Amino acid sequence: MEVSTQKEKVYLTVPHKNGSVTFEVARYGLLHGELGFTSDHLKDKGLRGPNSPEVISLIYDAYNNPKGRYESKIITTLTEGKFFEFTGNLYLPKSGEEVSGGIIVEYNPRIKNNVLFTADGDHGKLVMKKKSLVKRLHNGDSDVKFVPFGFKTGDLNGDNLRKHPYLIARYEEEGVEKLVEILSKSGKRPFLGVHDSVDGVMAEVSILGRTWGFEGQLDIITSDLYSRGSSIGVHKD
Image 1 (spheres, rainbow, N blue to C red):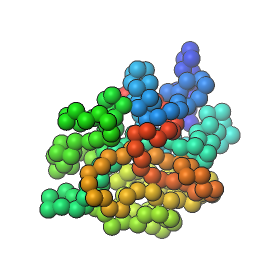
Image 2: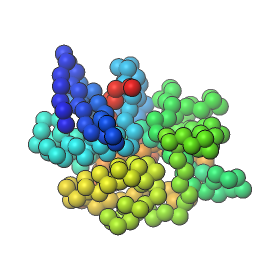
Image 3: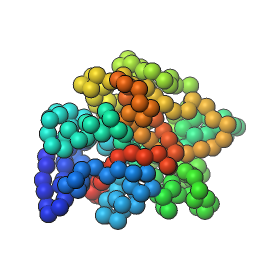
């Protein structure tokens, strides 16, 4: 992790995919609060929230120097708190439509008025635009993926992590490999807490960390907007 400072800002640059990603953090540490507050704060600073592969790259690199000033805070947040991943999950019930009975995963969804925004004006819950997401999916947009229900949830292990379709959609293959390494170094066992079926359309944000308080467990879950967690800003390209 390359650490640089400028006035009251700290920049953390870590390897990511074929290049790198740079995070900005205040000297006091990570940002904590509900997703809406976190998102608004980052936007006010000209930043965006990190999606799932970016969060994994940050945590993976922190384990290379676990006693470092910022690395240790990142690891503590993972093992004792939880990270927001700015990745939306649109749950779809089974229907006669081509894209149904599964989850549409979207990196860096639009956020407005503290909710994932849709044109229907419903700002009281997490919402995402199914029609536009399906169009982007058909157009091959790499930020949108679809995973049919039927995958394993609950307790996982290394063998079914690497080939798990939902985890690959959320973290990409490189990110899943990093997740396996994180689990090995942290000594945590993975628990996937996502819905494996739904009766109606619903949207939730991705969260990684210790959410239910079970010792030795790393929770990979989705939740509503009002969950509290931690985040760090990403410099926009």
